[in-house]
Length: 290
Ligand code: C2E
Ligand code: MG
Ligand code: MG
Ligand code: MG
Image 1 (cartoon, rainbow, N blue to C red):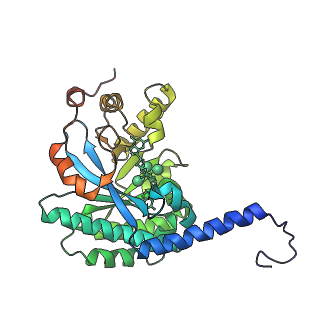
Image 2: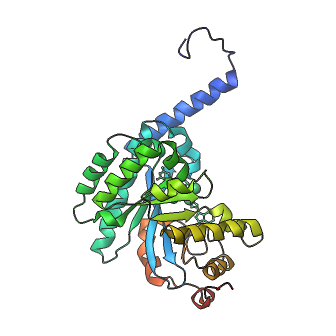
Image 3: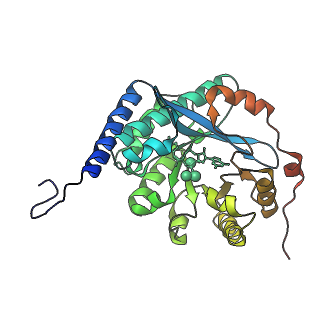
């Protein structure tokens, strides 16, 4: 009846089990937020040539009492398109702002990026709520916050999303298009969306050393970033060789296991003080094409 009249549904016990599993996970996650079982790990973003640390991406983990540390792929899909993704997103934003403020107090200016679900971003009061959250941390400048959105999300309701992004930009908040290249990015949209940063999806970066087509896509995106005056950052820089190839192409900003894995907030300051790019990176020049 709930699905509408004149419908016939075959009862499927495995589906029922799946649904129950889904609802149970949702309930557990709701409790996890209240019990502070969620934690943010931080992964550095750097300039691979100069070694400058340009910021930290906050990545959520669930410290599950029985199952241990769980990656977002395990639990985020259940709250996609669910109001709980708003509570979670707001928790992530305030936690990240709080962490940024703690770093500031010890003399570290580390801009932070957070990932936001499409459902959350499309709330009519997103901007107002964000303003409120920023207001809770008066020492933190809005410009220290970057919000990463998936290009697929941005394109779902382009008009509304553009309005929201513009309103948040006025407050000083920055935006990045995450996993860029995997959705249906129309160039017209790219031109209108007020996102300062493009994050190349790691699948292209992973493939670029063996796969000429992946490399061509990378070069194409690099060209786009120049043409549209966007900053470009490569995700999934997994080895020194990946970094060299990106630097030869002209892409200087990177994030990935070859630089650092995501780590607990407490480990960040020591990492920032110690990290140096490999000499192969500092010596790699951009190749110019004839
Ligand atoms: P993302 O935003 O594209 O984040 C990058 C993911 O790639 C992270 O996985 C990171 O740990 C992983 N990664 C970074 N460097 C490398 C590398 O060199 N090699 C490999 N193989 N992987 C690398 P993680 O933390 O499991 O997050 C997965 C996705 O979950 C994120 O992709 C993001 O879309 C989502 N996510 C994470 N935290 C949050 C959050 O707080 N809120 C929301 N809405 N989504 C989140
Ligand atoms: Mg991201
Ligand atoms: Mg990504
Ligand atoms: Mg991703």
